[in-house]
Image (cartoon, rainbow, N blue to C red; front, side, top):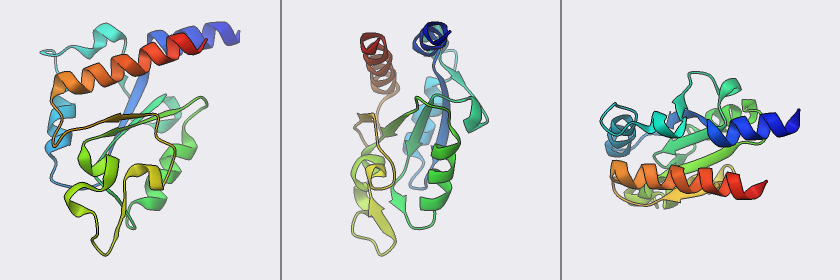
Length: 142
């Protein structure tokens, strides 16, 4: 049974998107990835509305004190194995918000991050390439 579950996660990762705040540039690019123009459904990627059904948490924006507990709760609600993708400079290192009074830095300050997609904001094709690399990493893991 576990082989079937692992196969389904490799071939059809379900994602949930969390906006931690920021300029919304990365959010716009991530939403563009989900449109028919870029068609990430060819990889089996589906956007889900609940963390209980998601395999991959895609986070944009910096880690700050206001969202720390919320994003950690979402991460804890996801079933194992779970993966986190930090999208954009703010999610990776805090970006332009680094050093602000309430900014902790990147998302790796709150939870373990599996993949980083750099850019400010990253282009949709870079996001697709990052997700495809994550899928390939999942395939090689078994």
